Length: 492
Image (tube, helix red, strand yellow):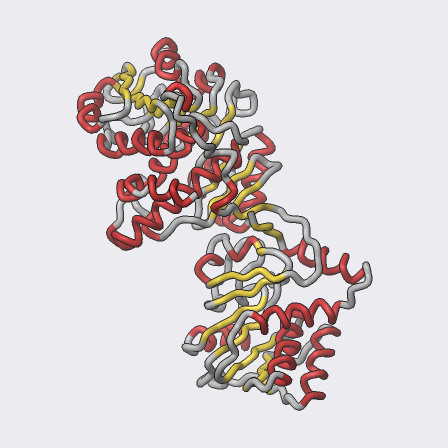
């Protein structure tokens, strides 16, 4: 796992290191040396500096480049304002570099451009000369390196209207959340984390391939399907019969390793779904006009003996959904995964019964669904996805898996980020595949809910990446992801 920090913690860790005797200029020198060591400085380089300490990193780098006899030009947006930036500006002048104030057109013809305009403290949109520089960097055709963050990008949220498009971001001390969230994942390029001698406290952890040994354990030959759990997947209605998609949901659960997957659907769509089920079992539930009726005996029969249940995929907006969900929250003792119309039913219930649920609850909303649950707008959620998810999880005692280009998984105490996935996942059914994988994992995983959920997001994302390689982002569909699940599990 990689530590993920917020801007305030980066500043606090810097201040702590300085208070303990590390000069601030030494931290800046270490940052500059880290950038220098990670690139081949062949050809002409322009270092573009802002007024703050990120600009100071640039001046310190320029000094190293000059002393190593590299071709370097220093451009600045405005005169340095912090003490450390002024110190390294003077060092540049002292060694023979003449920094030049930026004017339009000055960034043409460089092989490498180093972006040192803004650091982690940016809180406003890029405008004026900064906007002009960013636009020229992005149109330059040069290899672009951003120091700490692509300028214009918010360190905590990854939002920003006009941001540097970096080929490589060299960030210091730990990964900044904004490099993975929202626009950050598209603007940061290859991200390298370099130690500079500070010790920030992580707000979250970015999961990696080797982090799931406690979720996916080795299997004994002397075992059977009963050892790996029965799971239930409850959903579907007359409007969203989606026979192949529902069958794919059950297959995803089996591909994730559970022993038995039980697909629970309304009576009226059993005939449509049954031909597509080969390995899964089918449980029919009474319905009226294609929507499930609340029948406690039937619901308990459907969920009997299961370790996990996923509810809501293609469920529609039946009149009895809220009553069914309320009953499950009160009586079910496995792990309950709520997605799609299960989340919509919960929102109409105003989260009633959630905090007192008898089961472990995992919610898997996209930002629109989460807005209905938490009472915040989508922009408010996107401006602080980690904090919003953590607050909700703590309030209701649940785990939230907030979907996005980087998914946030948190129970309010432990927070994981998963950045696996691809643009090809923007297609109908991708969320159903994830729900199936999650349900399958919870059929046998003994790990915590957040770590197991993070594993599900990681596997589904890897499978989608493999599908996109073959099908392209334009052409791939959700079933392509299902077919790549075995390779994804092999990867981890």
